[in-house]
Length: 97
Image: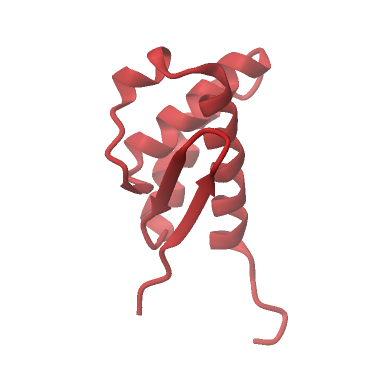
C-alpha cells in the first residue's frame, strides 16, 4: 500500500507529491541536513529542500538539487515547511497502535 502524500499551494501554483517515505529516506535526509542546522534561516530552508531532493523524497515534480538556488523564495519556504510536515508524518507513531 502506498502512502504518498500530496501538497498543493494554489497561491504558488504548485503541486508536490512525496514518495512513501521510508527509513532510508529519513536517514539520508538527516545525514545531509546535520551540518546545516545552525545556518541563517533562508539558507537552512534551502538546505532542507536540497536534502529532501537528494534523499529522494519527491515523487513529483522532479526537482534537482542544483536548481534550488534559482527557485523563488516563497517556493523554497513552502517546500521546506511541507518537508517538515512530511518528516513528522513519516516518523509519528500512531497512538492507536
